[in-house]
Image: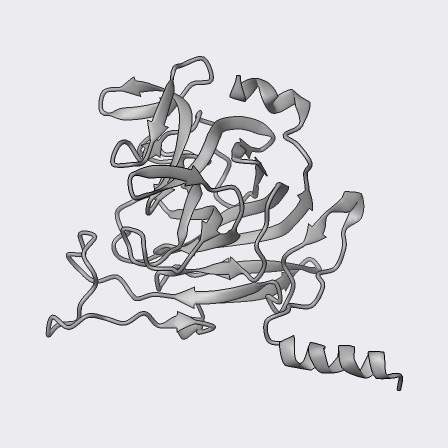
Length: 295
């Protein structure tokens, strides 16, 4: 074998644990991110829900801090992939807080996936709408959020249609920040592309409702799409724009800094959820038909 080939082979063996296999391509420049072995993802589990948790670090019955379960663990088989109609389908049970997190860092892309709800729910969501989320531009270590489970990021909320919640709502995760056009409704913010800009995060408002979309039957798939380019992102549900995020950033020492790339997390958050057709392709710019949302 030539020396160069041996060198490349040795490098691959040394780095193999950190380098996922190349995902299979899909038509139209898309890359598939879901396969039977979750080769493009790592698991991360923090902890089971602690009764009375109000954003404080979780503790056991003796008041001692609970360490996170950690990366590359899958207690209670929270994350699993089955084949349905010949295609991989991801199940996240929600029993333990945590996420799937991509092995790679991504910038400037179009992400598509389909979602539907399962039946199981866990504390503290037994009487609450089912919930999950796509966390993008994820950076740093997990555990810096309210639930001590996720990385600094922006959230495309995946929420059941109850109590006014809808797919595509926005959350600041940890010290992230952004600008969103929104109108106040009592003590809440609702996305409105004609409204004034509201600065999110940095000690201010950290949640904004998306435009409502008609709910689908629980057993049907909803298509979600995230366009994310140079600090601008568009949340789409079944092809309809429901929210636009501008100037994605994070706050450090009182100053906003750009947050324009990172890993992608899929939350495990006390409700059973299924995902499929997870695909991503590069974007050089926000497509022209969506630029009006940032003027």
